[in-house]
Image 1 (cartoon, rainbow, N blue to C red):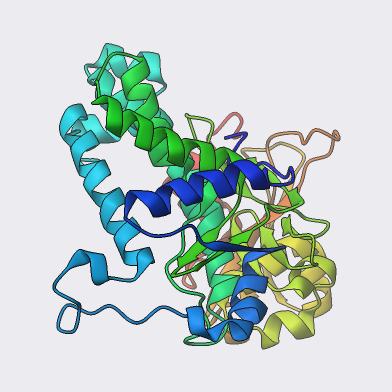
Image 2: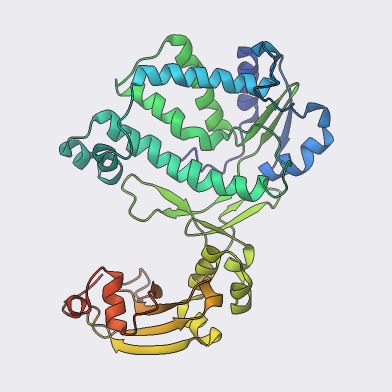
Length: 382
């Protein structure tokens, strides 16, 4: 995780040596290296200056019969796929993530999962591979790619490897060997070591025939623990600025794992919230602005109030939500958190409830899957 979230400058000499070795593995001459400060710079600037290096599109119907005639990126991809196939054969198949044991391995602490009957291979896969993949590959790489490389169709700089954010599969293969769950031929171990060194040394990179474009790592990354994560998962989040920032000023704003436009973090307003077409962005912006503030400024209609039986001394406030807020008619129940925040205060937040609920106590019970009578009998909720 430390390597995957690293903001240190790239070790350019080591990264270039490894990439040169990867080129040699597929019979390609050493490339010329071009370093950029961010993935966006690779997409928006570098390749426009070096169009002769833009790779041809490789399709099954038109691909050269001999692998040696493929673009170097395709050859490296094929070589890596073969390596991973061989390593997977050495490890053996894990149980399905959707099976009872697969779900248990992902949702229970390692000791509990082993005691429950999960195999050590499945527990290791869940606590290492799956948690790193969720945190780094899905949680960080995916929004970065969407934000930085998908702005204009056809502007992506070719087949991409993700350097430090590829650590989930690399670490999994290494630890399977380190714990005695697998052993690999010496040549495969050496090849895996090259990918591990590259993940420790640089950010994203794009191989082309004669040229390799390599991006520096970000200079700033902010995360928070993922809710309900039992294996140390994190997600990008920053409530005061960009969650990810690169040296050239490229930045990504994220609230609790959801990518948002800059205004949602730096200046959420009712007007901007109502003009935003994305429901999740609207939801995040309202929560960042604060439901109390949003309700007041948006002039929402108060439906009913009641004392909160599950949180003595707090009040439940039920409001009608017009269509323009979240794209559907509904109600929002403002509640006071049953748990004290680190600063000693209790945060007020909004819960969306069905339109046909008019009673705040019934709405609070619905949010817990309880009837009105059951919720009203609670001694204390969390």
